[in-house]
Amino acid sequence: LLSVTSELIVVLWAAVAVNQLTERAYDPALSVWDLIHRDCDLAWSAVNSHYILGIIGFTGMLWLRAYVMLLGASASKSLMNAASTGTAAATCLMVSIVNRGVESGGGTSVDR
Image 1 (cartoon, rainbow, N blue to C red):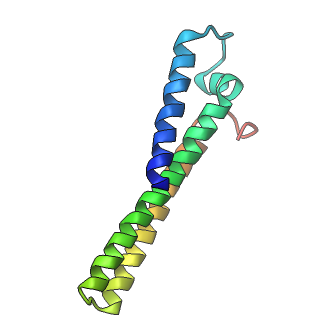
Image 2 (tube, rainbow, N blue to C red):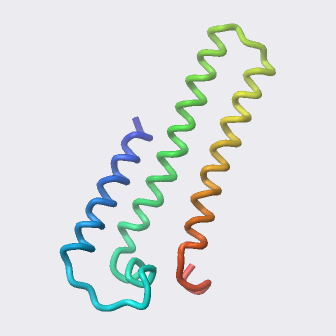
């Protein structure tokens, strides 16, 4: 439930930010990053943080489902460990991809 709620919050924040970008007049900016950093920082932060929270929650739900199914099937301990390790590795990879995107998103090293 937390994961789905976080993803819904992402969609709502993104919709609000797009509406603000299309309906308001902004002072000229040197780049899109400068505009977001100056005028839409809260929406940008909310979308990124809830997106990560949703990813972690979703993979947590996948892990729990796999664990319960393997437990019900009386699977071996090594198979359960492999499924858990694979899910943890996938979670780390997804968070890493988002972090790399945020890091190279724009601005200067001072802004980050």
